[in-house]
Structure formats: structure tokens, C-alpha cells
Image (tube, rainbow, N blue to C red):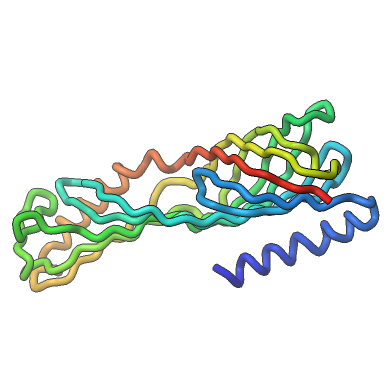
Length: 219
């Protein structure tokens, strides 16, 4: 992921920096917190009202959830890199935004036995038959983003407050449910049914809401 972030930054920064030199444009650096995690970014104006922006976000959140009567210790992993274009309406602070994300968001889940047993698709297994049950959930890697917000233009120097509201179209979740134990192979049908239910329970994440607040400085 670190190599990908550096590659994305270099690929985008080189043409943008060349444009900045040719148009005497400023660079706008920001830090922000959002529903995608904590992050930072930079923007360079293309015209008076249009700017290109690169953004990086990361955060992990641990909680408990239940699917198909199975209780999971879950970690929501937020990790993304965005390449965005901001169009400022009527040369003002309101901007429309469109772009693409490299989306590494996902879930890591570990089942917790209840009373020394796992109930999978209605079938009860003891912890010798099923000793561990784990799930990994991922989404589409390259996904579009649409939104709007309010911020100072990258072509204006100084500090500015920044906000974004939008949606990330990350697609249907893709889960992988695996088990270990003496009955792991025999439980294949029950595991498959629980995996289908898990996908259904997480289907609401196919469109992910983005709300971001931050502070930037252009120079």
C-alpha cells in the first residue's frame, strides 16, 4: 500500500507541478478527518476555478457485530487514495467534486464462540469441531466518487476551512469465510450459507457516505 501511495503521488504530482510552474499557481496542503479516516492531501489549481487534488486516508475501528447468529469481533479497515477534481462554482467557495479512489476499505472479522459452541446456519458445532471462524470482506479497488463542498480556492494564498460531502460507489461486498477444526470440511455448506448472509448484512456499504472536515494552507 505504501508503494502504491508513493507511486500515485509521484504520477499525479509531476504533471501538476509542471502546470503549477507554467501558470504561477500555488499549492494547497490540507489535513482532515472524515468518514474515511484521518488524512492529508494537496491541491494545485488548473485554472482560476478548477483544481486537481490528491488525498490520502487511513483509520481502523474495532467493534462487535452479529450475522446469522454468529458474534464477531470486527475491525473496519479504512485505507484509500483519491485523485479528485474540484470545480468552484461562480469563482466562489462552493465546489463540485468528481474523481476516482483506490479503495482498500474492508472488514476483518473473527467469530466468538457462545457457551463453547458456534452456531453456523442453524447447526451447532463445539470448539473442537470448529476451533476458529474468520471472515475477510473487501470491495472494488478502483471506484468513482461524486460530491460537493465548501473551501477556499487553491489559487488563493493563506489558511482556509475545507469540507466535503459525497458518496463513494465501492460496489457489493465480497466476503471470504474460513474455518479450522475437525468438522471444517463437513461444515462447508453451512459456511457457504453464512457467507451469503454476511454479504447481505453488509450490502448497505456498497454506497459509502463521505463527510470530511479539514484545514488547508495555500502558498
